[in-house]
Image 1 (cartoon, rainbow, N blue to C red):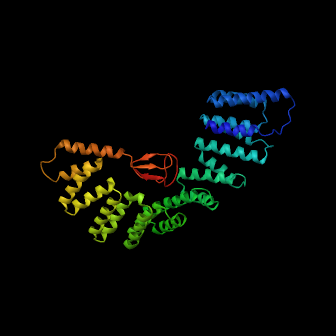
Image 2: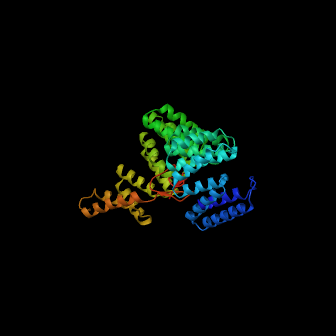
Image 3: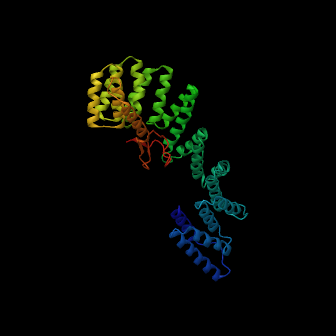
Length: 376
């Protein structure tokens, strides 16, 4: 934050000054104070920088940029009330140029966001969208605000503007916003609304895995297993890295059609291509559910030797419970322990910031990127 402030105020201050100075000494003193304040910022002494710029405002009260800088410094220090007061007073000036007014509106809106006053921030960002100079910035900020509030219809509106303008990653964000609406619609049983939004999501981002998975859920709820199977095959072909998310849909599709052998072949084929813990457990459960006990025993032994894991050991404990005398209370306690450890294990990481999670997060909680979580 400090480095951004330094770059911003340096660029502003080094532009030719419009005001004529009545006194050269005042000009020199202001320049020296400015340089002193910059030095404090460079040395991460923000408190001293605030004091210096506060004194500079007294010497040069007409300098808009210094007021903006001072307000931003207060905001970066968490003193949002003081930042709001400075930017509000600045905005109340009648002689601001249009760029200066836009600048003041932007910073005051940022203050409101930091303070959690989303309704006030929204009002200012909406005002900014009517200004040609900074409307893209305003739409970005509004989008962040609506995502934070989970106001998905409004988020779609902003994301669509950015998408139409060709903004980077806007297609991913817009498709995910439609997925959010579809997810809520499915939960409430509104299949028509879900279908409309999922179609829009795939139209915008053809490779949206989340939209594909939700569409499969929609097809399954409607009894259209043929469409669900076709879509699953497409997802596997184009986005194989999300294989762990395809296991449950595949199970529903194949077992509903009374095709346990097809489901088993699917699991075995995918495990051979790219072995994973989830696929191994799915295979073990399938073997036991279909009374293939010896095959389950052999595969479990191989799994524990080649790629031991919490899930595999937990399955082993549950599997051995079917044989009397094989387990004791100690084994049951170990199973509980393994389950607790499993809940803390990182299975997905964000490809942009490295955030780790044991569950899929379509919107990374750390960097707020969409569709960047990948399996470990």
